[in-house]
Length: 57
Image 1 (cartoon, one colour):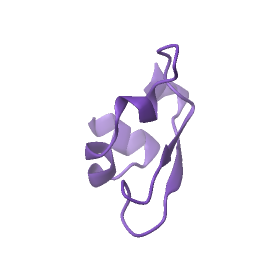
Image 2 (spheres, one colour):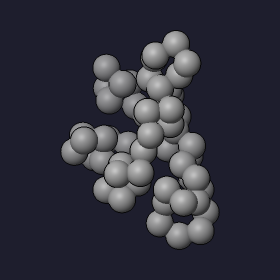
Image 3 (spheres, one colour):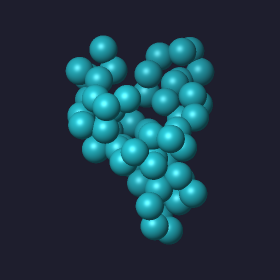
């Protein structure tokens, strides 16, 4: 979880609010990007987080 924060720039509060469906594709692979809703982020806007290859591995 610490590497998720460091390598993708996701805040701790956003990590807490992640759901499996946010991170995994329907086939069980890890997504290249995660779309966070306004409810999951700090502030009133959603955001897009890119997941680097080293984190997906």
